[in-house]
Length: 317
Image 1: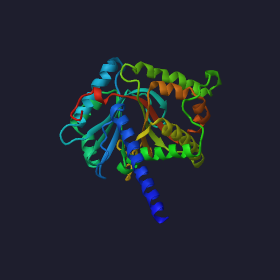
Image 2: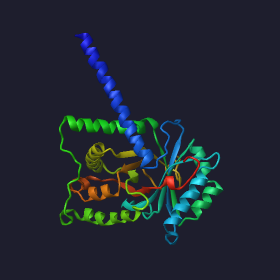
Image 3: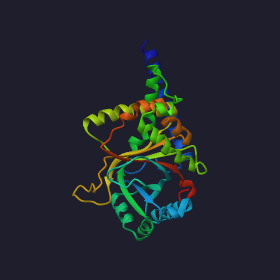
Image 4: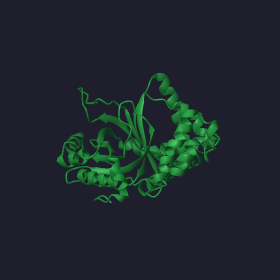
């Protein structure tokens, strides 16, 4: 009896390990092939990340936005600098911040060996020239735990397994909801995300929503937690979800000894969704109309971006 138990135990552990590896490779393939994400999986604890928001003059158009991203990537990846891990054009602002401007053209995520290296980059002439050529820019830092981010796909796999075992009703495919039956904020968002269709010529199979997050009151956090749990169920079912999560750290406008900066956010997240059609289906669904009011934060900036890093060239391609 003991031997049989041990055999089942070993088989169970082996199965869990194989499933975890498969789940991780599944998400990694999406990151590399769809999201154009070049984030190394492992790196030292001193590593520091930044998210840079750019507003390029509208007169320069799409090519001007891409040219600015190319120039910024070259400046960041100069010898002794950092590494761009993601770049995207902003298609639409999904949630507006009360602390920051909300009209942006592009986003860049970068990795540096340390916070000091990031500060040196931020003060360099080459980077300053690129940012100075923009209508405006904003840089925020974040500490990205390698272990936590490696575990994200595994956590989503566990969520999916739980739903299967409990025989919970599937979320996908999304059940459509007539526009007139949707809540007014959802109706407005349905119209706003039509802007994403203008980017189909670049990529239509991946959207990355970049978020700076400031949690709200205890009541807001409880409502937001319920919303997030339902969103995570859909992500686990559909094989999409967070690609980057970390603790936000101020870089610009440091005004106290903690260096939090004048714009305060607690968390950073970049979340992959499987394309423009998926976004239309999700925002147009009974599901999002039901859970949408639960998304309650103290403040947040969320922008939906189209991955373009592979179109920029560079040493890491």
